Length: 309
Image 1 (spheres, helix red, strand yellow):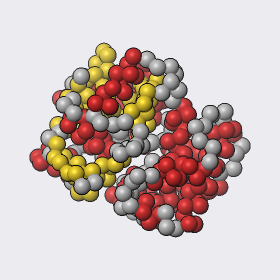
Image 2 (spheres, one colour):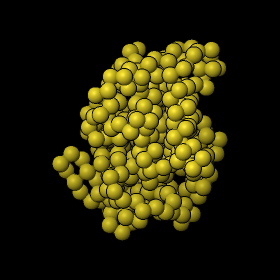
Image 3 (cartoon, one colour):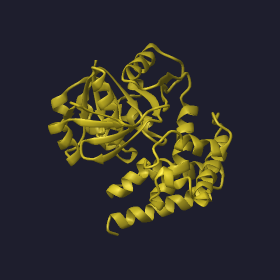
Image 4 (tube, one colour):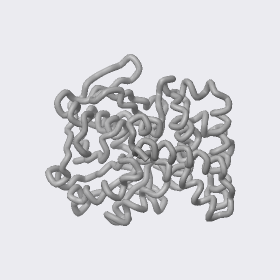
């Protein structure tokens, strides 16, 4: 099986590195960057606790040169989904499938509009990564589940094959008969810590020491849960604090959320697809979301400053 991982950020690098290490035929596809250059010339160094090793990954900047693949794993930032998948059309042959492992709501719909809904599977992962320097990534996968399934529900043979592929790469994976509750569970977890850490600059180890920040994250989750209930979504958790505890579980104290990593790098965040999605759906269903709205406003202000006004 020929695989393309679309998005050479921290998590895309982790997935490419682990699958390559398992002997799978993988290309990491994205625009030229210091990180991509470092991996191209010196390999990708994966750091897991005290264990460190370098994997020779294959990187590419031109989808046309890669050509059709069997599977496209989409891990670009949500704000770039449409742009990235349009540019990735040369990766799609007659039987090519795509799976979104991105944060937030709405990515699968965008992929379906571009390449066809019948080609798209859904997935969420609690694994993580932090690029500590170009070509070097801190990996967090211990006890972190990856879930995959069909948008329309049910467990299919192709979903099982995908689950087996990720298991082969050392990722604890579950094939789910219903993905909507899975998507919302991950959204709640992202809501609990992403924006508040990006605003404050706190790592997970620091965040848990600030009760006011923890409470703010939990209140944002409570709002999101109220929105989900109003929308008729069956949630997999009922306690807002559970989302926060799940987010910080088994991660290094110095671990930074992906939203904080974006702010540090000076790039646009996924706020519109996470807390912003809660605010929009709350408005649709008449559910107040003042905490999430405030977090969105703060992040938008930070982004405005990063863009130079």
